[in-house]
Length: 70
Image (tube, rainbow, N blue to C red):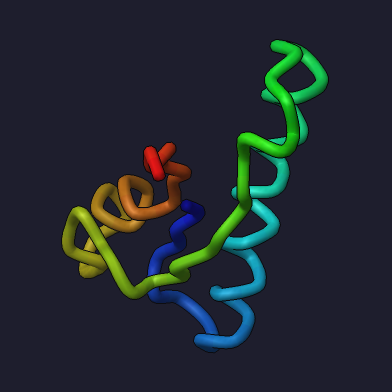
């Protein structure tokens, strides 16, 4: 699941978060030979922050990808 900070438009952040997750999926399949069928790239944009977006440090923590077991 890709995430972003809250800087910029929601639509742009949703797209960025999905592309961020897709990049991780690509590395996991290419470099670590994980079957692509086992992975799915999803984006949550700025909707699930782990830190406050009021500082650069908090925004940096919110720009992340998490692996979520299904």
